[in-house]
Amino acid sequence: MTVQIKTPHPEAGGIVVRAIPFAFDENINPVWNPEKPEWSHMANGASLTMPYLEPFLIKTVREALKKASNKQLKDDVHGFMAQEGNHFQNHRRYNEILKSHYPDLADVEDEMTAEYKKFQKRSLRWRLAYTAGFETMTMGITEWLIEDRRSLFKDADPSVASLILWHMVEETEHKNVAYDLYQDLYGGYWARTWGLIYGAWHVAWSSRKGYRRMLKRDGLWNKFSSRMRLYKMVAQFFIKASPAMLRSLVPGYHPSKVNDPNWVFRWTKAYADLPENIIPLLDTGDPDIPAQFSG
Image 1: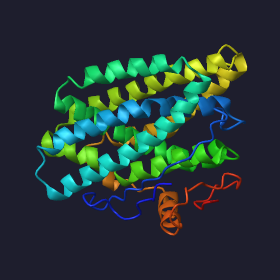
Image 2: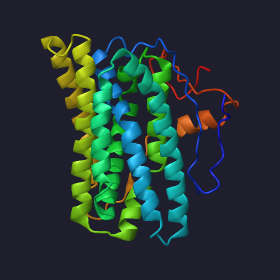
Image 3: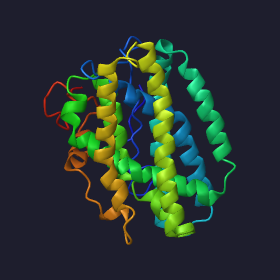
């Protein structure tokens, strides 16, 4: 098993890079929260986007890095790239298992490959605005997932729940980077606002393509009760994540002004105390889902 990196990457500044090799049982149930199949597939659809979205983000900030002058910002960009690289590699391993159950997800992946290849031809300013916009959306998603972790992850498969929440913890740690890089190179309100709107919409739509196919294959897409549960989850997402996106539109906004959920700090403390070579699996059997690991 790969040894976890618990100290900052040599070029990562204060951003800790954790090379966590999550292990997924080949026979894992794609409905990893048995009580919430629609939510399970919403998260699966988001996971499907990560090996296409996050390499795009990495390529964008790597190109922008050449134009940045602030040393601390450049160090933080290296940390951002390292964390995002670890994220999509773990999601890719999980996605391969999803595709063994739902082979037609490969078509969705082909569409995302083509779309991000097209995006790569856009201007650096456009791509960096998209990156900063998406990273703003993740702040709202993190707040939602942590605040509602009891209902979303209770008795769920710990490997998937732990993957998702680890990802969100690290999104919090590098929340300033894309915004600061965009401001350093370009600044301006409207392009960043457009990046937020378009980036959030595009990733949500790409995720929908994936979860729609999985729900269809499971025979749930055309069931009224399932569709109502799905709409409820989608509404919950917008209600919970929208405040983070709306406050980013206020003049004078900066991600550093937003208080992170206390659970994030508890997670990082628990992880720091974990022995080497242990994959951090959360105790989803506890109703509170505390930031402690079951081994």
